[in-house]
Image 1 (cartoon, rainbow, N blue to C red):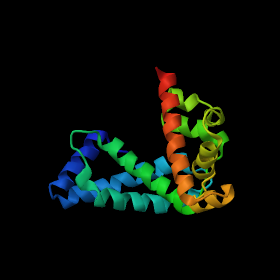
Image 2 (cartoon, rainbow, N blue to C red):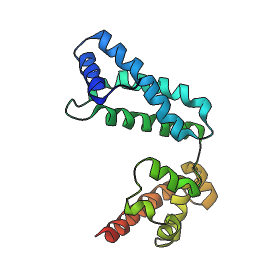
Image 3 (cartoon, one colour):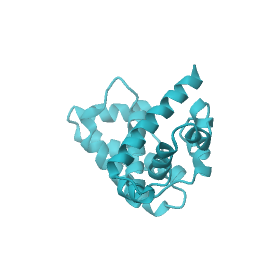
Image 4 (tube, rainbow, N blue to C red):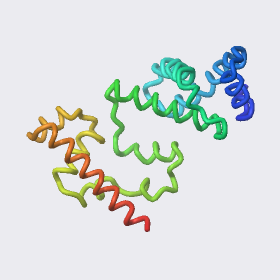
Length: 179
């Protein structure tokens, strides 16, 4: 049975005030919530769901002092879960095909966002080719700085600068379209 936001918040608050039973009840209640969250997002990597659930529970326990009692608990929990999943993908060097980006953005609640509907290839075509390549290599294809530098036959610091400047240029273009 899934617990309400109010119940989860009460257990979290109790745990923060030193109630061990409330903290244990919270962690038990989070297991099915987290399993469901990861099942919807993991696709073919279902074997890793239990590991992610455990990592997230540990993170909740270790980062509990960062919880703001004035904010919703479930949003805080899902932010932690999302970061755990991103860390998992980075460790596994899993990349997401660009074709799946729309589905992922919709599942994360960005279906109405202007930036979610923009075509990445079109945006990258609007910036300097060196910057576009560095962004594509690192953020779309999942290459490390060293791998991107080797592929482009440039220095690692040049890749970092290109990504930074390219992201800054993209952000400016996106802001210009939203106004």
